[in-house]
Length: 424
Image 1 (cartoon, rainbow, N blue to C red):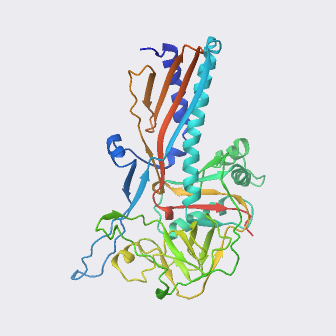
Image 2 (image 1 turned 90 degrees about the vertical axis):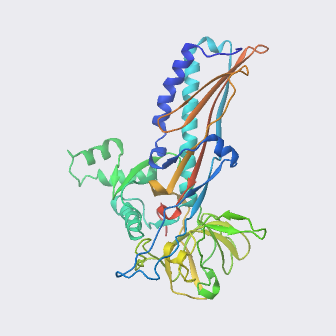
Image 3 (image 1 turned 180 degrees about the vertical axis):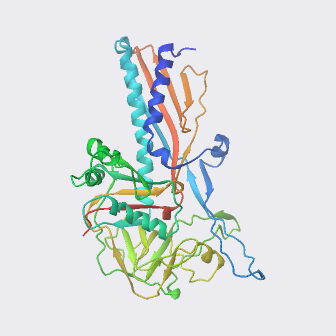
């Protein structure tokens, strides 16, 4: 073979991989799914993943007339990220072996950051639960509001996570380390010494050094939507749709197109409520009193239509699928007011349940006899990392590249949200 790895390079590859697994902090907080490479190639790197079933219960011993078909909803998961680091070293640079190892470490740091950023982008862009805080981050009360929203809507307990922008995270740590609190206990000492928050209000917290931001909504305060049944802005979940040709295909039930009075200055990512639309507990279907359901704008499609998430599943169509997956209760109005929640530009602080986001890893099939040295291995978390090397006799330079292949999918937008501070 024209190119091969030395023992030193193999050892260095193994060493930097250990650090790579450690740097994948956020991937430990989401679900993971692996599927055969052949299956994905034949499916154009997209596979439909099932969402959790929700079913109804009945009263009494007589179940006559109560046997209903269940609607299985699915979500398209795609291997959409192909990330690589490509570097070049000259024959003189290779005289210092430590430089080669440092480049490998830098490559792993970059690729682990790519995975973490992809997960945060999915959470920030598609999470639909919005917690608006009028003041700066202060501590327990902030995350307690997120917990209340989760509990009221039936999000499973345990495996809850929150990622906070550095300044917001440190403000929470300041609350724990305040002089009015006694020291000598592990919580306050860590908060003071390391700006460490840990678990608060059932959420395991993480500090972000690359938090996303969201601009203030500019859609104005006069936008309305017709929430009457006749307005047809409610959504009926369905597993498949049938084209005019008779071909059936899966349906992505995370989104809905609605008609509103105007979409002028409305932007993707804006969070809003609708007057008279309140959330319900996903299992019991009990309305959450005193609260309004929060939604996100996914895209603006025309002057009067936009795609939102989650869909308005209010059971106004009285179908079994609506009763099963109902997520809100509606007091109908032909001019229900839309109120935007992101009123001040600021950092996005996502919070989620593990099942909300899923990470899927792909694999490359690279020939071993094409004159390029190839090494690959799979980390403990399931990430396959490929390292390749080739030498150019004309320039006396060696090419190195490191590759990963993965997808990040929002499986359930109503199990993920974002919190923004100082929103007036």
